[in-house]
Image (cartoon, rainbow, N blue to C red):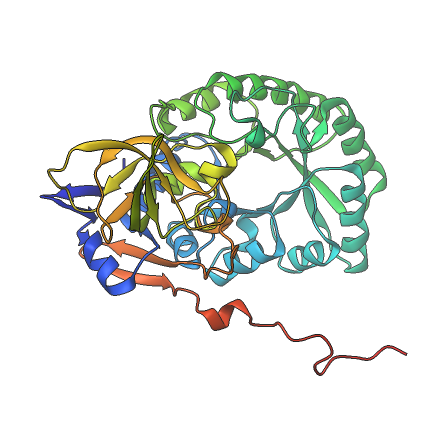
Length: 423
């Protein structure tokens, strides 16, 4: 559930008319609902109220500091995949003892930053990474908590680009090798503390069965590790629970919670969850303005001021995002492609979409854009990144100013200008 709805003919974010935001902030603009963010966090957390758990919001989904602070104030931990995300989480007031560091390519400086920040643990993705963490922790005279990300070879039945738990994916270590690495870490690596097992199989998963299958394999691994004398305190289930973009019917967090609680009975672990999309996906929209309309012999086009650099998902994954007029009209519906200004044929927000006729200057709301929207945006075609707004009740705040043209060249200089000369 979200708090974007029509009030009369005007589309609103909570109690704020989107037209008001457009008039004062301009377009394109991302608009988030604080009430929706809080509702989704509570729904997820309460689904596991009967067990020891830690909700670690996945920062990559939406990393705006205002979003992170909303979750931090509710007690959320954080799942990060870079030093930059760690910086953002700490800036938002995160408790470092509730941060887990995932990702296949952690740089040495990022590992050092995380160790010095006293995060809970690293989700290790390769044997070489494990040894790198041990060496850096040793140099710092610290001990780093680790879990190994185990690849259970479970098909999450999602888009192949966001599947992460199959043998052919770049993520994690296969189960047999993971056991060897745990045993090696316990016996030989003195600067790491094996304390958890991590298993994340993909994103936008709309069925319970892949989670259950992965959990069954992970449960067997836990038993093996404990028989080897390892004290495993945490089971990180990752994220991946899907949302409704179009006609998907993903399970509610409560149903997912029941399945996980049943599957982890007797394990005596603290469960860690890394929801991202499920928390923020339907809590945000992208508002864009129609620039022109064009009728061709084969297609109708609505050309808008938001492009694939602002919202990459349709171009990248062929993803569906519902599109709603910001003000309702009585015009007939047409079938059209909603396209942006980027010089790529793949620059579209919707294809062959049935929408009410649009006039230049009118605004459209691209729904379910709170996850992997702004966080994946770019400056392609030298376009400033858009503003972000948070609606809260009857008011709103600009939580990121629109970039300026000057921002686009910040840090650049002409070659040789005040530069170093090599001998």
